[in-house]
Length: 124
Image (cartoon, rainbow, N blue to C red; front, side, top):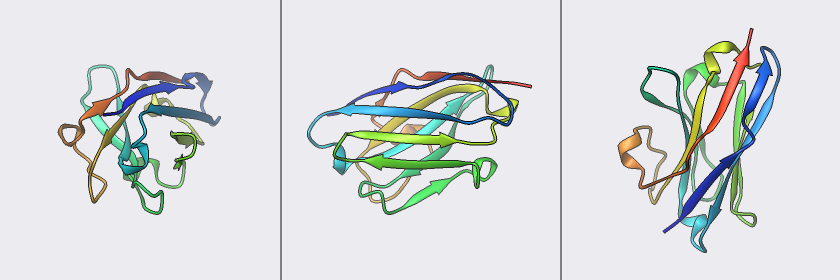
């Protein structure tokens, strides 16, 4: 079992950057695929980026490719999402999720563990 806590959200102006973190408890963190989802007001929870257990494979939704970078430090039980060139369409609550999987899954129902979310607001 793993518990997830997101941090680092906030209010930024369009064009700026922000890094959010997902800290996990539990000795088996390195076994989990970790994924970031986001949910805007009145919208569904959508896949943003994912990273496999070793950190050697990543996957992004098209709208964030080239702007966002997901990484993990298994020694610190933490996954990061570096977000550059932010725009107002990136405004959402960002959630990290964990699952034991051979691949990076893009549907929320595939994930067993979720954090409480961190709000990211991008002003124009």
